[in-house]
Image (cartoon, rainbow, N blue to C red):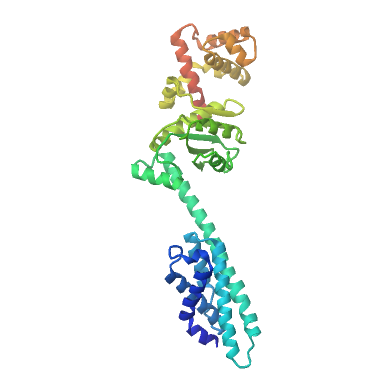
Amino acid sequence: MAASLRGRAAELGIRMARRIRAEVTYYGSEDSVPFAELSASCRRNAELVFGHLAGDPSSDMTPALETGRERARRGDPLADLLHAYRVGSEFLWSELAAEARDAEGVTTDTFVSLAGWWVIEGLAAAASDAYREETSELVLQRERERSAMVEALFTGMLTDRTTLWEAAGVLGLPTGGPYVVVASEVPAPGREALPGIEARLRAEELRSAWRLLPDVQIGVVAVQHPGAEDVILRVLERSPASRVGVSPPYRALQDTPRALRLARVALAGVRRKRAGVARFDDSPAALLVASAPDEAGRIARTVFEAVLELPAAERDRLLETLECWYAAAGSAADAAELLYCHRNTVRYRLHRLEELTGRSLRDPRAVADLAVALHALPLLSLDGR
């Protein structure tokens, strides 16, 4: 009897497909699943069931596994796939029951109990497991492709305009800027500095793409709407990462490698402090330093050689005072407010810096030298010198 039903698998597959199309909304459209494909899948699964019942040792779960994988690759909903299997199972049950009524010595209950686990639990479970496995593999595959595309973007491997547009599509980024690059120091190799950052930025309607490196987590963020940069800084300041550097905005994706370099410079500046989020200072001095990092590092070493030889606490105190003096436009009183100390303390520290560097803060050329060297100091952290 099972062999007879197996011989009618083509006819039963078409009828089963019609039943599924009528009862499962997702399968009702030719655009979702073409009828020819659906009926072929139904035929293969019917052959599997009847072959198993007929005792064919070659019958295995391959058709159900293939169906599950194919539906996952196409993005069909799992719930609709399982619904289709339930409808198909009911159809097969009815056919088995009809055959059982005409067979001598065989009751309907016998066939239902025999086929029940195989049709519902076996096929549906196999298809469901294959669907989930394929979905997991697809997620990993897309993540690998996305990660490779992000790396290519940051390393400058993508230069052709069409390729850049394709990369933007894969990464979910707009094809035009502005963008910013973020670089955050990781707590340990292999651990994210900004866990969940992409989802948190997406909640703020900001699209981004990220890459984890041994020392930093880096990302490019589209900042197209007004106030987007402030939103990014607010999100970053709420993150568990202790040190973060942010590049200035840029308009073309091919400039991402340069923006990464600037974000790293900003991050290196934060490394001299306990924690914080730093935006790259796009002043002429800072841009000059970033454009020639090797020479700038040597300048910093030369200008601040005596300062760098001091004990760490004294060295950092003097350099912080100089930074605040520049931020206060050369006013010792305003710098004192930033440092929460007396103005005379600021004057004493500045005089000490003049002695150590051999440069007077009353000489405009010396002030310029010190400014460039101060901007270049983070580069000493970048290259370990």
